Length: 305
Length: 269
Ligand SMILES: Nc1ncnc2c1ncn2[C@@H]1O[C@H](COP(=O)(O)OP(=O)(O)O)[C@@H](O)[C@H]1O
Ligand SMILES: [Mg+2]
Image (tube, rainbow over the protein chains, first blue to last red):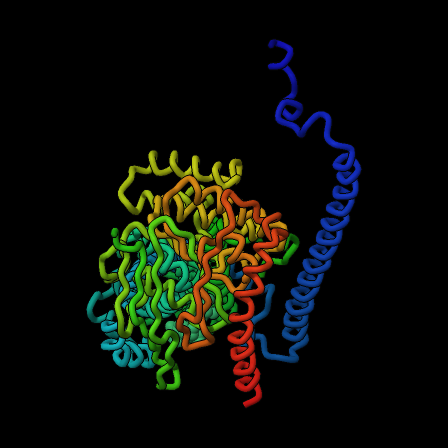
C-alpha cells in the first residue's frame, strides 16, 4: 500500500503495463509522425512571424526614411520616432486632458458599456424575430431602413439627449453594435438544422427548452462571430461620440491633436485605440473558445490572424 | 379487436414546391401496423417514405385522409413516439450523456435521475466510457447508437426509424441491426422501419410494405415468416429468405426502374 502511494503518478494512471505487441510497435511511429508534424508547424510559425517583423520594419523604416529625407512633409504625415516620442511624453508627463490611463479608461468604458448593451439587445431581438415570423415580416422594412441610414449621425442627437455624460458615447456605440449582432443572431436562428428541431420536439422539448437548448446554442457560432466585428464598431461609436462633445477620452485626445496640427499625436492616439481593440479581440476569442468547446478543433499550427 | 398501433386511411400528402406548384408526395396511402409489430417500408428514393414517418409522428399534417396512432387521430407531436432520423440529429453541443438525458429531462425528470437513466442506456447501446465525448468525437456508427439510446430512453410505444443505418459500413450495419433486434425484443414497441434496402427490410421485419414510385401508395404487403430470434448476418442464407427476397424484389424492381427513368429524364431536361 505504502509502496503504491509513493509511486509516481504517471505510472499509476499510465497506459497498460503490458500493451499488446502491435501497439508497442505502432507507438514509436505515431510519436515520430507527431513530432515531425509539430516541427513542420513550428517552422512555419517562425517563418510567418519573421515575415511579419520584416513587413513592419520595411513599413516603419520606409515611413521614417521618407520623412527624414523630406521626400514627404513630416508636418502632414508625421514620423514613427515622433509618434514614439509623443507616446512617451503622454505616458511620463500626461496629456493636455490629464493622465493617459484615464483617457484610455474613459474611452474603454464607453465602448464596453455600448458593446454590452448593444450585443444583448441585438441577441434578444435577433432571437425573438427569428422565432416569430409575423413579427419579423412586419418589422423588416423598418429594420432595413434603420440599417440603411448612416447611424453615426445619431451621435449628435445623443449628445443633446445625454449631454457630456458617458451615455451619449455609449448610445452611439449601441446603435452601431446592435445591427451587426442583430442580423447575425437572426440569421443564426434561421439557419438552425430542421432535423435538430424536429428531434428535440419529438423528444418532448417545449418552446422554452427548444429556444434555450437548441436555437441559442446553434445560433451561438453566428453571434460570437459578429462580436469580433462589433467591438471594433463599439470603439468607433465611442470615438465618434466624443467628437460631439466630451471632456476626456482617446477620441477627444485625437481631435485635440488634430486641431493643433499635431500629426504624431493623432497617430499615437490611433495606436492606442488599436491596442485596446486587440486586447478586446483577444478576450472575445477566449470567450468564444470557452463557449463552443463542442466544435471540432482547428488544425493545430494554424496561424491566428 | 384492439385498434392497431398505427393506422393510415386514404392519406394524401401534398407539398407546395418552391416554384409555386404543388407536389403530391403520397397518394391514397393505406397502412396498418399492429401493436408490437416490426413493419419495414421499402420503396425507391423519393417515393415518400420519410414523409410517411413525418405524418405518423405528427411533424407534418396529412393533406387528406386519416392518421391514427393507438386509435387517436394525430394532431401534432404526441408522447410515446420515438424517431430515429435519417441524417444525424444528435445535438452537437451536448455530450453523449447530455444527449441521451435530454428526453427524460424534457419530460420533467430531475437532472440526477435523467443522467442515471442515460448512463444505463449508454451502457446498453455499448457506449460506456464515452459519456463525456461530443458527437464530433465519435464515429458515424457511435453517433447512431447515441441517436438510438436518445429515442429508446423515452420508452416509446411507437418507434419510427428513417433509414437509420444507411450511412454505415456493412459490418457496423449488421452489428447495429442485430443490436436493434435485441433492444426491440425487450420492449413491446411497434416499429416502422424505413429503408431502401430490401435485404435489411426482410432480415428485420415481421412484414414488408412496398411503396410505389412517387406519389407513393402501397403496392404490396408481405408477411416475413422467418423465426425469431434472428441473426441478421446468417438469416440471409436461409432458403425462405431468398424466396421472400425474389418475390418482393419482383414488385420493387418495377418501381425502382420507374423512379430511375424519371430521375434520368429530370436530369436530361
Ligand atoms: N417539405 C417539403 N416540401 C416540398 N417537397 C417535399 C418536402 N418534403 C418532401 N418533399 C418531396 O416529397 C417527395 C418524397 O420525399 P421523401 O418522403 O423524403 O422521400 P423518401 O424518404 O422516400 O426518399 C420527394 O420528391 C421530395 O422532394
Ligand atoms: Mg427519406
